[in-house]
Length: 181
Image 1 (tube, helix red, strand yellow):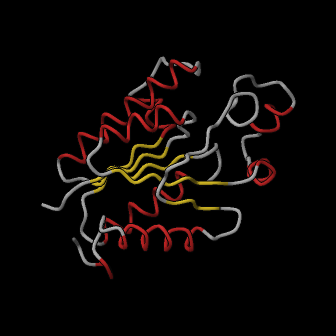
Image 2: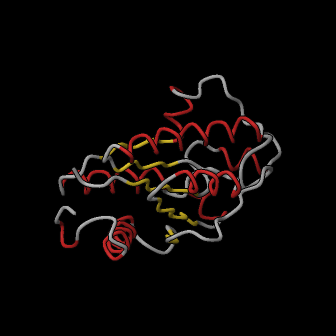
């Protein structure tokens, strides 16, 4: 059994976390790894139903995702989390609980996020109609000691995936050239 780890995507809503998580999961499965994705929206619907968006509820949600990722990673699975996870302290707390943890900051400027926003959430938040929206009326604290920054406004998803996989290979998380480690 290969050694599992947690691949944690953090960034603002619409930055590309879920897209990149899905692409990474598909490629890693193709290479023979066992992979599970915990997407922030899906976790809120299933594992964290009833939680709101207060700081305490957001922290609880992220702790739950981190706990499940740790269980999976300890059992040889690559656990991929795609969650805004706005607060640095909680992300660092989760990191400390994991034996192998790779944090990727999915960075994207606000103007690009507004352009991409098919649900109109940023427009509502910027107009003051949506309170507590991360990155507008609620804080997002970018990581300070993460493994990789991916700028989805400057790269295609395929370029981002290639950089991510290359970094995972270089750091020994996965085997090189499509081989399983």
